[in-house]
Each structure stands twice: as structure tokens, then as C-alpha cells.
Amino acid sequence: MNKDNISDRATVLFLGTAFLICVIALVTVLNSIWTSVQPILNNVLQEISKFTRIDTTDYNFFVPPRADTTNTKFKTEAVKPIETNTTNNIQQNNTTNINQIDYSMTDYNFPVPELTTKAEHSREYFPDAILDDAKLLAMQDPNVIINQSVISISIPKIKISSPVLQGLNANELLNQGFWVSPTSYKLGQGEVVLLCHRRHFGPNDPRSCWYLDNLQRGDDVIINVDGRSLLYKVVGINVFDGEDPLIYTLSPNEDLIKIVTCTPLYSNAQRLVVLAKRER
Image 1 (tube, one colour):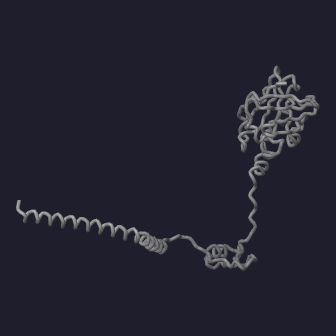
Image 2 (cartoon, rainbow, N blue to C red; image 1 turned 180 degrees about the vertical axis):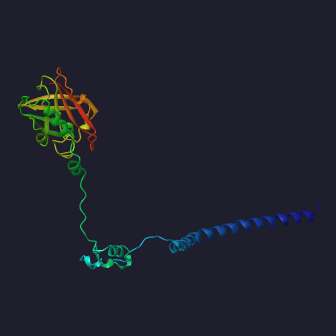
Image 3 (tube, rainbow, N blue to C red; image 1 turned 60 degrees about the vertical axis):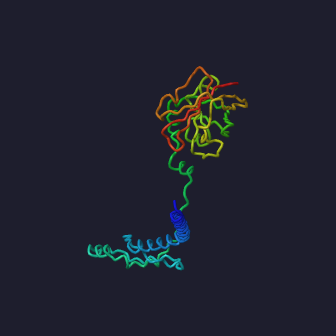
């Protein structure tokens, strides 16, 4: 191979390499410029697009003029009342142009009523159906002799500490605490049914069964009767439909306490039943 051919190949290789380096450098420079310019270009395009959309959008509703915030007196004469003496007047007023209403004379600074808390709402509009149950239980034997022992109940886990009332005026007594169904056996000689409000007292009252569903097997239920403390342990927790006759079916052979309330918390559809057995 002669020297001229070798020299030509070296020249071509050099020129090719130089061209490739120039291309790579040019791409790098252009990429750097685009990275710097792209955010600015995007912002410009977004602003142009925004104005274009606003100019071409039809919102299809009437926007009243801005009210005068310095005017705090509501003026009823701002809107002309509809005259009802003739049909023509009614039709005429019904077609009044909305632009004739002076919105600047209207004061919207009226008081907004406070929202009712969930507990208050439940007491006012969702009375516990346990009251209906108690009324039916009290009517089963109106001549029953009520044992007037002084009874109270304590459930430490859910901070219940309540009197347990006895008598046939169930609704009044339940509004004071737990209530003994008159269908119950005598304490210590069979099953005793205690009814309690789920929502009436709210979550923080010690007479409330709000958290009764938090109990588990083995939890303590303490009954104080005439100065004595009787310890019961939870042996079962069940949910029944509100009409299920098993809720108030009693066992005559065991020393049991059955506590009944409404469930779910904001419903009267079912009954939550906690069964506790005497330990000592």
C-alpha cells in the first residue's frame, strides 16, 4: 500500500471523527438550550390557552352584580312584590327581567344556625327503641310485685356506673339509668334482664351503653345490691333482629345478667345483648 492511500484514509477518518464530535456537541448545546427555554414556553402556552378557553366558554347562567358590602341593612323594597289581584299582573311579574333586581341592596349577613352534634341529633330524632321494648315488657304483667332493692351496676372497662331502677313506669326510669325488666327472675335465682339507653345520654355519661359493643368475653360486670357486690363475667355478646323473641327469653336455672340495648349505634334495627354469669 502506497503512502498516498494511507494519507487519504487518515484524512477521511479524521474528518469523520471531527464531524461526529461536532454533531454530539451541537445536540448537547441544543438540549441545554431547550431545557432552559421549555418552562418559559410552557407557561406562555398555558396562559394563551387559558385566555382562549375563557373567551369561548358559555357558562349559561346569570351572575348578579357584586353587592355593596358597606350596606348592612336589608331592604325589602329592592325587589318589587308580585301583585296577585289579576291574572295579567301575575303573568307580567313572572316575566320580569332579572336585570331589574337591585342585588346591591341585599344583605346576605344572616345568621347561620349551628350544626347539631351527632349525639344531640340522635336524641331528638332517633329515640332508642329500647323504650318501646320496655313498655311492652312492663305491660306483660301489670300486677307484678317489684323487688325494691337498691341496685347499681358498674362495668369498669367502658366506665359505666349507673343506678338500676325498678318499676313499671319504664320510660321515665330508663331516662335515669338502667332499668330491670319486671319479667326478670329475682336476682340470684335466675336470669335478670337490664335495659339501657344507647344514645340518650351521649358517649361520656356513666349511665350510657354507648360503648357496650366494646365488651369481650371475660370482662367484669359488677352488680351492687343492698350494699353487697356481686361479680359477673361476660360469657357472650350477640346481635339480634329487633323483633327476635329470643332477646327477652329468660333462663330460670342460672344466675345470669342480660344487658340489652340498641345497635348499630345510630339505628334501632337490632339489639345488642351482653350476657354475664355470676362468679362470686
